[in-house]
Length: 475
Ligand code: BG6
Image 1 (cartoon, rainbow, N blue to C red):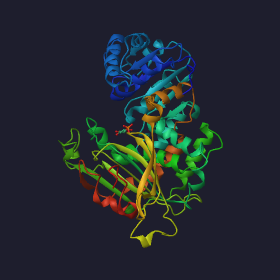
Image 2: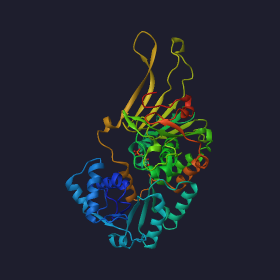
Image 3: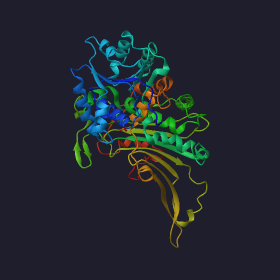
Image 4: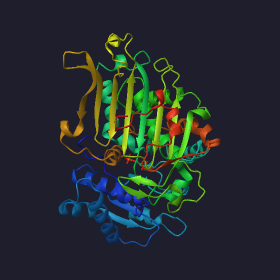
């Protein structure tokens, strides 16, 4: 992160009374403030249709920061931060005269932390209040709920804002480990030569969560794992892993390469997708309810809480290399990782020695938790016999850097304040993401069930290469 404060501007959070503001945005802004990385001049204005005062917003921010900030709350730092906080309530018709009066600078960054259904009305209200000039907007995901609605949302945004003032956020791109995929690939010489169909047998990408839908049942009923994670987080990880080297580390070069990958994804066939839904089970020894028993969820819901896909990328680099992607809630443990599995050796020199099979080399990027990178290879076990064993070279962020990385939202808010689009999603990327999943959304395969605390439905094993996924337990 550049260590200079961004240009002077106000920051406005629509939906400041919501969950995202409390868990992520206010703690991230507080940490940026504590590190001197907010604009020197400008207020932080929270907007929401609730009867709050400035002081109530400050009290809410105090409790959110104490609970969710990675650094806790320091009184002096909080006092300086809180002095910049203001609250405005939009008019009953959603009018924004109150916001216009509260602004202190000619320029502002507006974060739309509101439900997707409210995006266009806020955009229209900004336009009606003559606030479009000088405004940049950050839009949360999901960006639309299918290709058509994403195109409509892009059109509504473009009617008011030029593309260079639109920031479509996918917080996975703000994660240190995800940015490090680029540094690993393009800051080292050894990998590029093997990063292709000649050496790679297949690639597996997992975003696993042990949490359920928590209090977001009603939202999740409309969303499901494909819209919530596959279309955005998983496809962004896929693009980072599969893209060609960009000609520069800037927004245009990087996003041009990412869109090439997404464009090369072959249309998905129904038999290459498994949708699953969790039933009651146990996580960490504690009983947890099934998805259909969660608050806000219909008892006959067919929404998927798990999705697995097998994709092909039709490019010279990746022809015939399967990419398997999966995500799920209430899986055995939280674990996001990319596993690159290399081809088998061409000749099994040690096969006459009773060694039946030799593990393929594997490079694993542990996105979270226990962030790190692991390269596995086969070694001779010490002793008079020729016995082999798979061992690994392990890099761990915690051990090497001994510092807690900034939260994804800190990085991304700072970038947006500096008008840097490198880690934001371009219009064509978001639309192509929807295009890829469109056949599944149009005729979704019926969900199959998996018990909470498992690694997902058994049916998904058929999609994994050799019928098994690389779970952290080592299976
Ligand atoms: C969000 C999804 O985008 O990402 C949530 O809406 C999910 O359903 C979350 O829990 C996961 O984020 P992280 O950073 O905890 O992996």
